[in-house]
Length: 274
Image 1 (tube, rainbow, N blue to C red):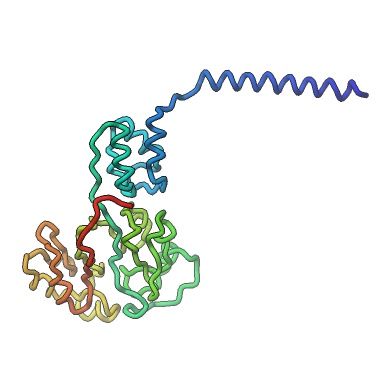
Image 2 (cartoon, one colour; image 1 turned 180 degrees about the vertical axis):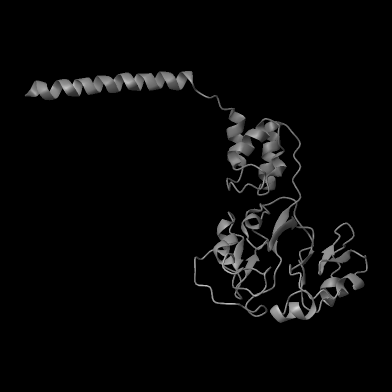
């Protein structure tokens, strides 16, 4: 009876020992050498895996930076201190990328824009947009279910008290995840230095636009006429800003009868995140 139990246990133990030794030997033979600099660079990266650098994650970006194939400044969420540390580690000059930020090009909140129906389906902007274009009467308006906020790795997007997406620019790194996921293309990532932007995307005009949204652009053209730098032209019933000419003076914002042009009052923009 004892032999019937003992010998199978010995056999199994022997097989396990042989397999363990085999795996240990294989791990040494097929070991992939990792450049220690890659690991050091990776530790200095924020670890958000946001994709703003063009890589799907921080690991791939760290390898490219360590190999000299990509500048560390391409990381949109990298702090100034860590950027300098990577430069010192690799012995290279580091130049931060121009900071970018996501901005919501819609003022069609619950007070301004009328609704076609009450949506009670899946709590996702993409799902809602598939049902007759979404609950908003404006075909270009924010759906308001905050799918962009769920996708933001930095917690920079929240739902305003009037039911549309809003961005905390102090937290936003401009990685672009929100822009990519928005079914209405309401969110646009732009250089943070661009203080003035058009907060509307409708191509309706005059009464047709006003009937849908109180804050919608009516294509009156006042902004283009009053801009002292000639930086605004009208295209497809919307103002288009030439940022090579725009000085951020805010005249267009003050003359817009619908508040369709917005301005960020932060004039001094840090060149590094964090």
